Structures are given as structure tokens and as C-alpha cells.
Length: 603
Image (cartoon, rainbow, N blue to C red; front, top):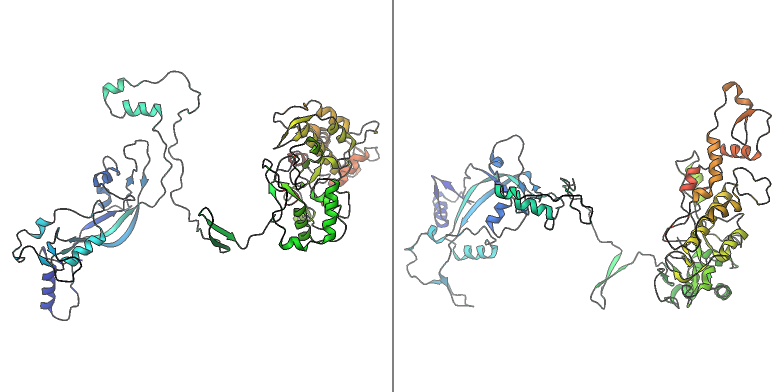
């Protein structure tokens, strides 16, 4: 603080003398702060060079507007790259403060010495300290509050060495401060832009001779790296989001590992697949044993392990549903999960995705294992909001049951019906004659496609998936016809129709393409379209109309198609399953052919 009176500045010794003359009533001196308007600007950078710091405010900064008495506080822009005209500034925001600006003057050098390590009093080189040859003002010639010269340790040492020779002055009150706390916008890097360099070289200097040299290239460019004028702003967010990051309380530090990195253990984490392996489709080599055989692995019943060993000897690759159907006896889900991990490993993706493969066998090396490739489908879709069925009814049919299925053949796909207790099937579990003919006549690849089709060509693999999906939809809508129907029923899907549609797609193609599911379901779409085109009957005939197979309206007593009557009646019932006959055509087509989730039956 400072004491200002009669425009004179008092030293520390004069202040002490002044206090002793006043009396014992005053414990500390009272100072008056001059009435000056001072505005502080908090620069966001460390200023080692004052001139460069002032240049960051622009070529002609207007500091006067910060001091003027205006109703709205003014903002001061700041450029981090003032030499780049394309750089965008950050803007300050006004903050009311109540600070005092102090000016502390200390001698540049004290001249006092003492022996190193001794506690003796300081002595001076000049015996006559009272007759100071130069005034204190002449000794202080450097402003130490810039360029980080105001080291607190150095200032404190100077104050201790000169208890009676430093001066303090209150310059004024700081009522307003301008701070830079907002986020800077993304900057467009124009250092390697030829057009911008041309503009900076010829237009920005505002030199007539260089202006005449400015030329634009003729023609239209379409190459990579085309220069496009950047937008005026890349983001409108100027306030940082407070994420409130904190450490997980369930994670403990186990110390450094062999490489010196910290080991973190989640005590609350679930040890998923702790006994088996769940590898990527392109990971080599395949594991030949479980990760460990202790803990819960020692508590598996011997009868269960014996049944699983016999199943693996019979067939080296199973889906979880298929191998569980071979087990006899009541076992909990946790016991089955550990036991299956002891029997084999699983792939995260690829043609053998989620199948349990016997340890020591790699189906990616031999085409004889192509019959064990897996097919995954989305069997249910969330219909909440799309129908008038309560969400409890929809959820009741979608919740996965972990109890053992009473049907030991639920993993078999015969083309006439299928079980919804799983979404994964294997090629060897398909008994539909139509699908078996497609699989038997499919050519075999020379190398395994690790990511998608395995030992089948991608064209054949897409046709197999599309045909199964089309027949699944026809089964759920009860619109799968038999080849013995004479004549064929309208609105039904037949194997011959699917075969004719699939014939236009090549088998041995490895180019990425997708078989159109909409084309395979065309008969169902025609039925839906005909039903939507019916006109409402007149009010007087409302009780005497029936739907005909063609979708027209006829009087009561006319003979109509029995399937059309069934379809209209089912439209008035509440659907209790994810797939119901009254489900819209658009919803059926929009459903994916294959389930792309990272987890299959283990999800």
C-alpha cells in the first residue's frame, strides 16, 4: 500500500517515524489511494517480450475504449498469430474487480556483503552510507514487472536486505478487468495454400506495382487438396464444457508393470470370458487351451463336462444354442457359461462368429469346416410407438429367456418354421431342401475370406443370407407357399420365385454387393399395396361389404379369398410378437438381413 499526501512519497523509515509521532493509538499507517481509473488486461500468454505482447492486440489497438465511460463494457480482441491475416481472434469479457495497483521500488544493488555461511551482520564496501552518492531513483533504472523479471524470491530477498530503503506507492484502484477465458475458434492453416500466398504477396502490401502482378489461374481444378474458402467461423462454442472428470472409485493402482506403466485394476468389473478366448476374426494363431483352470473351473460337474466332451468329439464347432440342446440335466446359466469356455474359443466376427470352436482347431485353414459357418439374423425389432400395442406386450415377447429350451431341435432350420430362442444358425443345421441345393452347388474358395464369407464366395454368401431372411419373413407373415399349390396363391412366396430372383446374381463374385431383399419380398409388397388402395365403403353399405382377393369391395355374400379375410381379421387384433402378420411392409424391408452387433448369442 502507499501513503499519498501533498504529492510526496514517504520511505519506510519516514513512515515509522510518522507512526511514533502520532502515538500509540494507531497500529498501522493509513494511506490514501489516488482517484484514477485503471483498467487491467489479463493477457492469456506469458509475455517475455512486451513489444510482441502489444502486437497481439492488433496493428492499431484501441485501449481508450476500455477507459471511456460507456453503458456497455467494450471487448478487446487478441490474436495469437498477429502476423497471419487469416487467423481469428479471441475476445475478452469484462469482469468487475476491487484491486489495488501497487508500485514497489527497491534498490538495484545493495552493496552489502558477509562471509559465506556466517551469521555475522552485513558490512558495506563504502563506510559512508549516510551520504548516498546517488539517489534511490537513479539506482532503479529497470522495470522488473515485465519479461518475468519479478521473481518473487528475488524481490523478497531485496526487501529483506533493504528494510529501510524501499518505497511503496498505491497507483490506483482497479475496478475493471478484461480477461480471456473463452475458447479459441479452430484456425485455418494457410501456410501451404498457393492462392492465399499469392493474395498475401500481391494484395496485402497495397502496392500498385504488386497489384498489377496479381493473376488468377484459368480453368477449373478438381484435384485433391482443392482450396476452398473457409467459413467465417468453425464453431460457435466459446465456453468450455465442465466435464467433471473423476477417478472411478472401483479402480485401484497395482503399481508399475514390467514396462514401467501403471497397472489399474477394476475391482467392480465383471470377469467376462475369464476362462476362454474371444478373438478377432483375423487373429492368429488360434488358442489351444483355456486361459486358466482354477476357481470356478474346478466346480463344474463331471457329468456336464462329459456330455460336452462327447459333443465336441462328434462335431468340433457348435453354436451355443446347438450344444446346449445336447446337454441333459438342469444346470445354471453361470455353470454352463464357464463350462463352454473350457470347451472352446469364439470369434468376435467373421464367418465363424460366436461359434464355439474346439481348442486346437482353426477352421480358417481347411475348407471342410465351411459347413460350420454361422449366419446371424435380426429376428425382432422394437415396434414401440409404431403400433397401438402397449409397450409391455412388445417387451414381453422380446425379452431373452435364459432357461433351457424344451425343444432339442430349436437350432435346426427346416425352412417351414424356426425357433426364436436364438439368432444364430450354422450351415450344417439347415435341413431345408431348397437351401441345401444352393449350398451344395456353391463353389469353394481357394482361400478363406476372414472378414465375411469364409470358404464361400461373397456372391453365394449374400444369396444364402437373403434367401433365408426372405423365407423367415414369409413364415412370420404366414405367406410361405408350397410348390404343390396349383394354382399359386396370390401374395405368397415360393421357392421357385426366390430361385428366379437369385439367378441374376453371380455366385463367384467377390465384389461387395447386397442382394435386394425388396425384390424377394415383392409378392408381399403387392398384397400390402392392394390392401392400402381399397376405398372405404359408403356409410349405408358399411355393414354389407367384404374384402375380395383383388382388394375391391363387394356386397355381402360374395365369395372372397379366404386368405384376404384372414389378413383383414388379423389386422384388427393386437400384435403380441415382434413379427406379426399386420406389420407394415416398410418395417419388414427396413430390417437388416444380418445382425451386425459385436456380440451374438452371448450378448
